[in-house]
Length: 83
Picture 1 (tube, rainbow, N blue to C red):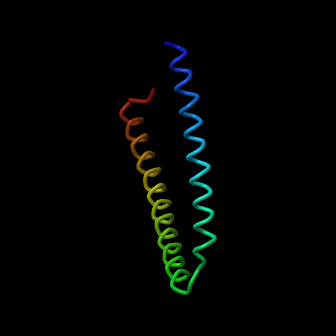
Picture 2: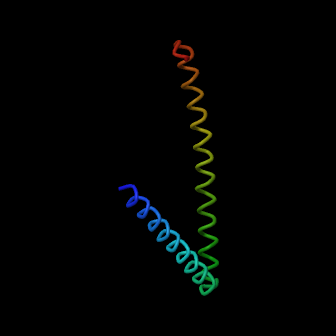
């Protein structure tokens, strides 16, 4: 039983590695062949702007969550729930 599991893990690992290598090669070939046209550059800059907006929004949300955690911890401390 243990031998079957070991063989399955080995072959699964080999297949996963092969898929990863093939995917990487295909991604590289696709990047080289695509090139950036004027429209491609415009859409790429739009995508970069959207990603930056998402990042800024997430940073702001993280600050708000930190503030809420602080408020919650202070509230629990005042009620005597501190561990």
